[in-house]
Amino acid sequence: MSLGAHDPISTKVTWEREIGPLVQARCVSCHSPGGRAPMSLTTYEEARPWARAIREEVLTRRMPMWRVVRGYGDFSNDPSLSPFEVALVAAWADGGAPRILPKATTPHLEGATFRSNVSVGVVTPPPVRSTDLPCTARTLPAGRVLGVKPLLEEGMDLRVTITHADGVQEPLLWLRGFDPRFAETYWLRTPIDVTRATRISTDGAVPCTLTVLFEAKTAR
Image (spheres, one colour):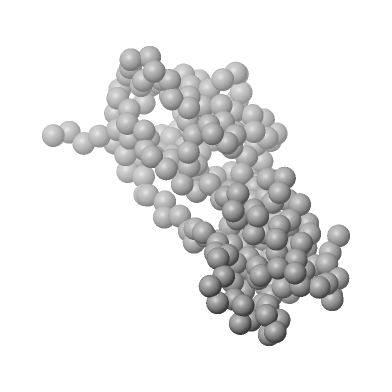
């Protein structure tokens, strides 16, 4: 359901100030002309008819698309919205989805507290080295794991765990409903230090390949 052309404005959240930058940072990599998503959201004119649909997708956490189970690993390129950002989108859609506020309300903007904590992009560290591993238990070279890119059959789930030399296990990635159209590298927010005795393994007998990106340990 789209918004009507003359829906009353009952919010101070606007496209120009909060929602547009948020969409640019988190959505347009897919929602752009020729992108992987079915519609473009690069401009206010494109996005406004979808305001209520955007609200629904955001509230149900279906968008931005992120197929990693939350809390299992921590990734710097996670596009998920914070609770505050979700509330901003809902307030914008529920309040008439304005581009800017009507002139009569403009003076009240001074001192307004709505601000979107937008991450404008992620600089991915260039891996010193990468290795492709079958999805079975394997040892890793000594160094630091920076990220992992799994390739598996469409719709399959995959959970990846690192086991250190002392037996301590560390969650790396839990992926649900793999979609090859959105295959990507999952960059760890905090790299994991590994030794030659560290093993990486997956749950179940899922046929797949893991590309592990890591910074090799240099000899001194």
